[in-house]
Image 1 (tube, rainbow, N blue to C red):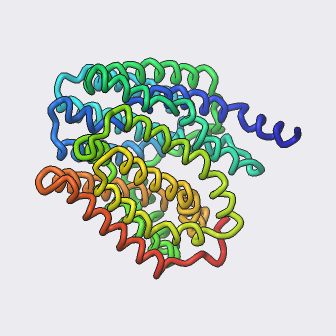
Image 2 (image 1 turned 45 degrees about the horizontal axis):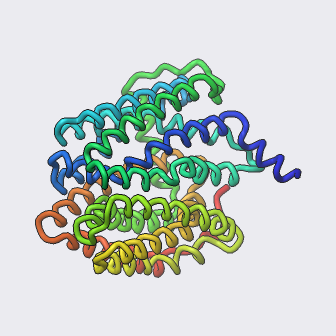
Image 3 (image 1 turned 90 degrees about the vertical axis):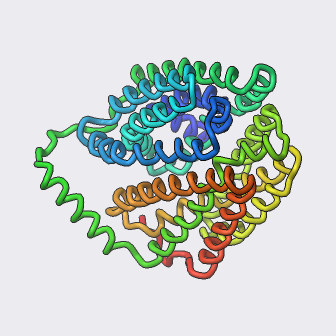
Length: 410
């Protein structure tokens, strides 16, 4: 009973509000997120346009994220979270009523602007709301509970798409996201509590602020251990490989393997179920036994699963390949994220995470464009082959050169 009481205690306060509001957003959001590439094609866009839209989102997000980080520590978390959440909900109307695919570039730009400003405050609010005694449980709930609300949503959207067409069904989906987003934003406005004790901000000139940021990043570069930079470099190679593959999996499944929208929705539902079942036990085991025992055995299986995927010509083959990837991700995902944190001194985590985020954004943008070009101009498997090659290179480098840290940073 005491354990149950402790778990229920975690759900109180801001974390409970965030889980509920994000769950409502997921209820509608999972009806549209995985089908977005098909919406671009349905409105007349090309495969390269899918990559370009992804790239625009990534590049526009860079500066707003830096601004959002500053604002989160000066004006507080709550105001930014509910305001930007409302603007992100309104942005769904641009998608819902887009007459041509070019409008989706505008939606991506606005989404990146509002999302970039919100992200630091949102992440900080969640971190502020955890307790050292149940922090792991809190983050586990954050990764699992909101997606549970939308467990059946992809399958429901797939049925609508098969019956009414891609564009019509997804327009309804984006309207639904707008409605649930407004409700979620109101819940955050009404029930969230400010988690930052505000102090009088220090007023500094632009030149001095820029100089301080540059000096801080120089110190971070010098302070990071060699294994961190090894891990960072390998992660960039792996990210480039995945960026060529991930945006085009749904188009391959539909156009080459003949997968229906309902079948793809069922696949996304099963993906979430695999993640729910495996991730928490795997995370607990990695805390006890070490990170590399869970990362190294899985890495070489990703390229195998990708090659199996592109040689599949039916729904069953695609499903097997994707569920294998879901299982691999669930096994090593938490260990991989934790290993990154293990290398970084606490006083440098903010800047090092910013460095990783900015680098990942650039790499993902470039890779998604290259992947779209290969898919469109060469073959519908070329981007997968190149991506699998990069995943293989990254896996071999990780196995050969990456080591478990002797001491984990607190």
